[in-house]
Image (cartoon, rainbow, N blue to C red; front, side, top):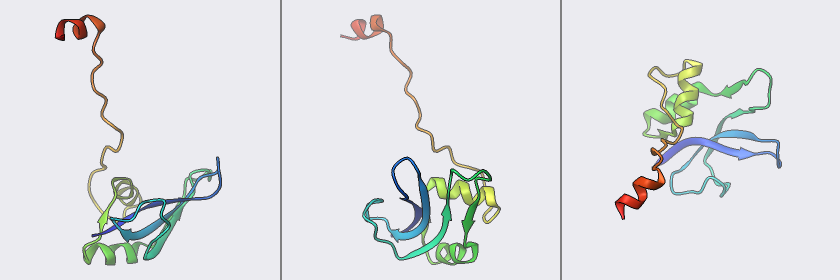
Length: 104
């Protein structure tokens, strides 16, 4: 299955990202991809995302899936319509020590 996601590039403490089309089996750090579809530099003051919207829509029509973060970027840029997806991990409620002892 093809996936459109971010691939980190750049050196240590200076992140930059490519938007790539890759096979979902490939690791994000493997470096293998089929096509570069844009770039994202979070250290820019404008937080600008450079995307090739036409190519992304074309690959989505051929069956490529989006990562959750890429979905949110495309919604923010107005390339696709929809609601943003919560990508932050859901925290479990903390258990107090008394509850843990009572459970044993």
